[in-house]
Length: 103
Ligand SMILES: [Zn+2]
Image (cartoon, rainbow, N blue to C red; front, side):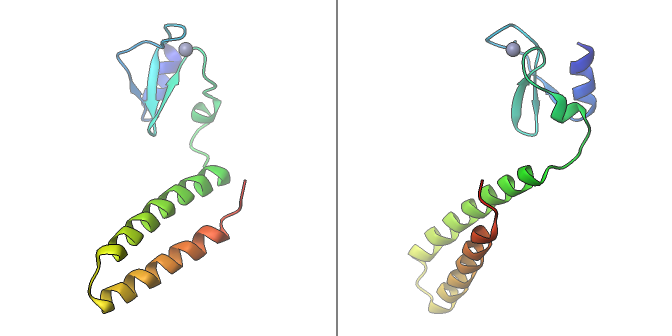
């Protein structure tokens, strides 16, 4: 319970439903659900140190989503000037994706 309170002070939200595995208190933090009894919460409780891997993973996700949107927009765009913009944008996203380190 103290742990849950600490997590909440770091911006986590306590969930109403208990953990389906062990009935522990669950919290949602940065879009992920953690159980305060069986999950490893050290990454949360150790403060807000940003990990390089986490940023890269996040970046890959965001760029992929944007690239997907840009490609979809290109598929329906009739105006050549706007197509040009979209192609240049997609090309930048693609370049950036390839620069990201692979796991
Ligand atoms: Zn649990």
